[in-house]
Amino acid sequence: MPQLVSIAGLSVAFGGVPVLRGVDLALEKGEALGLVGESGSGKSVTWLGALGLLPRHAQVSGSVRLEGREILGASAAELDRVRGGRIAMIFQDPASALNPVLTIRKQLCEALALHRDLQGNGVKAEARRLLDLVGIPDAGRRLEAYPHEFSGGQIQRIMIAMALAGNPDLLIADEPTTALDATIQAQILELLSTVRRELGMAMVLISHDLGVVAENCDRVAVMYAGRIVEQAPSNQLFADPVHPYAQGLIGALPPLDGPRRRLTAIPGTVPDPAHMPDGCAFAPRCTLAAEPCGLAAPSLAPIADDRSVACIRAEASRRALLGVAAE
Amino acid sequence: MGRYFAIRIGRAALTIVLVVTFAFVVLRLSGDPALMILGPEAPPEVLAAFRKAWGLDDPIWFQYLDYFGAIAKGELGRSMRDGRPAIELVLERIPATLALTLPAFFFKVALGVPAGIYAALHRGSAIDRAVMMTAVAGFTVPSFVLALLLVLVFAVQLGWLPSGGQDSWRHAILPIATLSLGGAAVLARFTRSAMLEVLGQPYIRTASAKGVPWRRVVTSHALPNAAIPTVTILGFMVGTLIAGAVVVESVFAWPGVGRLLVVAVANRDLAVVQCILLLVAMTMVTSNLIVDFVYGFLDPRLRTKGAHA
Image (cartoon, rainbow over all chains, first blue to last red; front, side, top):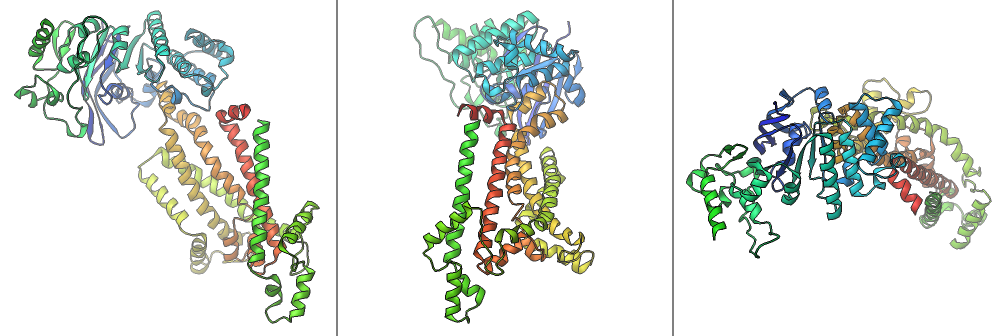
C-alpha cells in the first residue's frame, strides 16, 4: 500500500541557519502520528515547510510526496489544491487564527467553495452542518458572528470545522490545545479523535505534551534540534524509550502510581541552531556520549519492525534503562 | 453605538472650543493690531480710537465673552483691514485652495496606497527599496524645498510650466505635484508597514493553509485589515484639505486660504485668523469623527465594543 505522505531528507534553513536538518517521516492512511519535542525542535517547521507555508526567505529542500506525487516546489495552483483539500492544518493560537474582520460564514464558506463542488445554498447548509459537527450550538445564527464573539475553545472548534471543509486525508494539528484551559483541551482532543475515527482521516498531532500524544496517537516521532531521533508505536516508546533524549523526556514525567521518585532532568540546553555540534546534536547533554558521537550525526536506523532510532549508543542506552529499572 | 458617537461629538466640540480659545489668547498677547495695521508712526489718538472701535481696550476676558456671544449669533467678526466680514473673505478663498488640495488628495491616495501595498508584497526586492527610498526622501524634504526644486527644474530650466500665479490650469500643476509627492510618500510608508504587520498575522497563514490562492489572500484577507490603520492617515489628510497648503500657496503665490492666513497673521487681523482657525479645527474634528465612524464599519470588534459601552 502506498504511503499517504512520505517526507525524505526535508531540510529548512533561515538565512543560512539550518533549523530542520534532514527529516524522514512517513504516514499511512488513517494513522495518528504524534510529533513531540521541545519548542524550536522543528515540529511545526516540518509541516509548514512541507506545505509551502514558510516565509519566502526560508530555504527548503528534500522531498515531500503525497501518494507518491512530489509536492515540494509544486506550482502554486497545485499547492492550493493540496492545502485544505488533501492536507489541512490547524494552529495553536485561537485568538489570532481567524480573520477578525470577516464573519465565520465567510471564512468557512471560502474553504467549502474552494474544495467542494457546492453551489449557493448548498455551501451554507454544509457550513451549518460542519459547525453542528464540531459542537457549536445554534450554528445557523452563529455563522453570522465574528471571531471575537467566540471563546478560544469555540474558535478551535471552528478551525477544525474549517479544516474538515475540504474533506482532507490528513489533518495537521499544530499544538491545537496549548493555548486552552485544561478542561477545554480535553474536549478539543476528544473532538479531534472522534472526527478522525468517523472520517477515517490521518492526523499528525504536534505537541510538547507527552501525555496528550500518548493518549491520542498510534505512533510517536520524537524530534530534537531539527531531526527525528526516535520513532515508535506510542505504547512501546513510553514503556521502553531507546534514544537517551526520549528517555530523558519520559524520565522527566511524574509517574501516577508506584513509589515517589525524584524526577530526572536533562542537563544543559538545546544547542543554538547557528552553532550545532559536529556529530550527534544531543551528545553534549548525553550521559552515554562516547567519542564517536562527536564525529558524525547518526541517521535514523531500524531497531525493530516498526521502530527506528538515531543513536549509535542505542544498545548501551537500552541496557542502561533496563539497569535503572532493575534497581 | 449612539452613546459611542455622543461621547465623540462632545469631545469634538470641546476640542474646537479649546483651539479657538488658544488662538484668541495667543493672538491678543502676541502683538497690537492697531500698531500693525496703522503703523508705529500713527498718532496716539488715532491708535486709541482704532482700539476703541474694535473693542481692543476692553479687558481680555470681556473680549473673549463678547467673541463667543457673537459666534453664538453666527457672527465671526470683520476684517480690521477692509471691514468686510471675515467669513466672506475666507469663503471666497476656499475654492482656490480646494482646487489644489482635492486633486492632491486624489494623487496621494492613487500613488501612495498602491506603492505601499506593492512594496510590502515584494519586501526586500529592488522595487521595495526604491519605493522606500523615494518615500523617505519625499517626507523628509520640506515642502518648500520640494516646491523650489520643482520650480527650478520645470519652470526655470525646462520652462514647461509657470512658477507661480493662478491664471490657468497649468499654474496648478506644480503646487499639486508638491502636495501630492509629500503626502504619497507618507501614505506609501504607512500602508507598507500596515500591510507587513497584517501579512505576519496567523490568520493569513490560516487562509493560505486552507488553500486560498495568494492573490485572494491579499485582497480579501490582508487588505481589509491593513485598511484600518491606513484610514487614520487618510482622515488626517482630509482634515488638512482647507489649510494644508499654507507653505505651498505662499511659494507659488496661489491666492488660497493658506495665503490669506499668512497675511492675516502678519497683520494681526484677528477676526480673519480666528475665522480660519475655527474652520480648520472644524474640518479636522469632522474628519476625525468620520474616521471613527469608518473604523466602526471596518472593524467589527469596535462595533460590538461600542454597543456594549
